[in-house]
Image 1 (cartoon, rainbow over the protein chains, first blue to last red):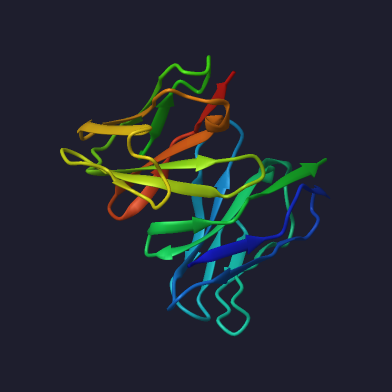
Image 2: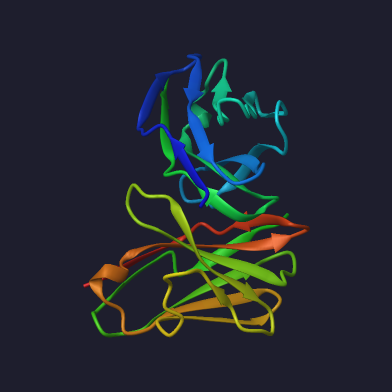
Length: 111
Length: 113
């Protein structure tokens, strides 16, 4: 079956540091790939997505590129802010249904 | 827009009792809602897909007689954990479909003593 593996946290960074959260997937066929973010006390929100190989999803300064050859979808941001502190989930699925999630990575950004 | 709420946000109950969790789409109608469970340091696992006016579709390994799902209206789905036991303690999250996108609720923390 499908599975998603993402780096375990927690990750603590200083403001303006570079962020990478690794994510790899296994799937039959070519799934869509997602990053969701969960701020404290709120539900998961779609951060970005990519639907085919070499697509780059981007939003709020975050980026991730669908790499078929390495089955990866790493999340990056050049300069994190305190407001980026949250839990980030990598996911794969057939469109937006049948989502398979990673375990989540908690990011804390300190001033 | 596209806000999903859950109630309660946390609940503590005694072993053997039943607990109902509500999931509401506040500003849209959702024919389809989903229920997930998340154990500490684990992934969200899809438990069931709930369709308004019909029976829920449960994922393999999820006991449908234990986790009763009712989706009686286009804005409300309920999950009832019957005869709860400590191993049912978990974080339960729902989502609602709008235009083939899932919008998630904030989750409900269930602790069974």
